Length: 199
Ligand SMILES: [Fe+2]
Image 1 (cartoon, helix red, strand yellow):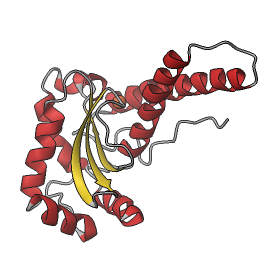
Image 2: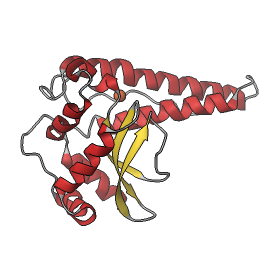
Image 3: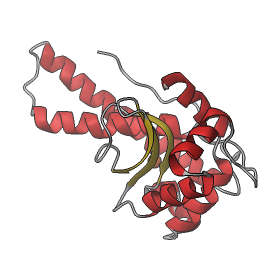
């Protein structure tokens, strides 16, 4: 079976300041994301041994570990390149700009829905913008943990991590300010490229 590995950040650890601090980025990328990579690989190791007949396995528990940790790895691997150094008037253009207008009625209306989803995730999770190829539309999705409430088969275009490890050292319990500030660091070219590949 294939193993996964931690991708390097596409910018320096301090590149997103003042929106996201260097300290958060170092811990978040080097410790938390690495942890999901390690635990996903541990689950894959177990499954490989199980397939060879070398290990009895609690399949339910192992597949739960795999889903949680591999999705954690996948979502963080989208989250990092979804961001770039901050700009004040940061709005989407290109195809993603057109599709946001088409499905949400404008960028402000999209922001309102995405912020509401991200701010109200119960416990830990993600706000996502996805393209569902079956219904051929953009959807805002609220994911709990890394894997619950996801839309099967949808392509994640934009991911916002609202686990406390993503903001607590800087924003304390004020998830709302973190979410509002985060728009300054969204890399809309990356989001546009992701949409172009799947539409
Ligand atoms: Fe995270």
